[in-house]
View 1 (cartoon, one colour):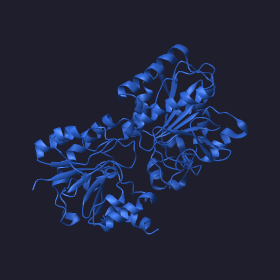
View 2 (cartoon, rainbow, N blue to C red):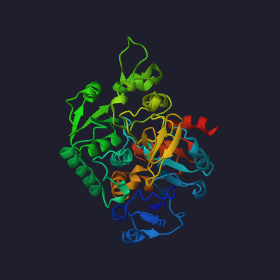
View 3 (spheres, rainbow, N blue to C red):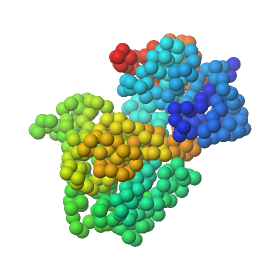
View 4 (cartoon, one colour):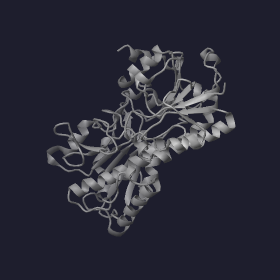
Length: 438
């Protein structure tokens, strides 16, 4: 029997239009490796059923005959099938409470689970991701939100013409709108309310690179973290550029011991020995973009207490927009109080009350917290993702999943991402058991 793969319909959100494997890749994999594909129909998927049919796939609700099922986001428990191999973004490695029921059900059904997030090389670098697109969309959306916020304040500004990313016909069209804003900055400058405009970027991975690439569509001058306060207060600073600054770990935290020096490996191993010093920069930023990985062991980049201090007494600080591409609820950006959707991507977190008000009106920072940012560029994101996933697909489809885990013939990159095998946590992920008990 030829290897068979199912591509499930995405149903976590009405905005989720991406696919893990495009029709073009379906055609290539069928022709080169003899893999058969069954694709569930979807009314919202960016690629039509006709495109999959033309590529040689079969369209059917029933994925039972397939050995491996690929998706993008988590699968509702009622759709899980016994002893199936699933490949998707599982969001379970931090013990996320909202996905423990799904993980338990996968275990009960004796399933195998491969998590894209844990497909890594020998050094632990991720290989399968949508991160660059998340960064691109977060920056476009944050600039649009800045325009809306300044409009609400009655401040004419060069960002007013930037729309929601999903409303453009392509990424090229969206970036053209950003470049047009850049031309307005060159001609008219940024408004005095935010001049000099400083955009801080926390994070330098794939998401951070996407953020920086869109920032490059504006007339920018890169500055060092040590120069932020000086540039913000210098009357000679230009209003015809956007100053951008990259913050790494050594800029945002410091050792608790005043005599100690920052050591990044020590920080990763012993984050409890460090505290946040990011408060030295925040008052000078117009926009803060966050793309850092975070869990509860690490100091927060922006705690609520600091935001309350900035906005106390009715003050209106420089900080207008926080673009939280990481979207960790109550996490590194503690005022990321909820996840949002593309049609309502931002809210104002009101420091005085802790209330969340959708939109850009209110006293407090505007927070962008869309947790499916790449879905706003579904075709481009799917094509990119499918391209980097494709080399691993034949081995995943052809593997004999009846053998013991130690004998499983999978590339090491994929074996490292196997969370469950025959319904049991694999050795690297046995720590998740403690989250299943609660």
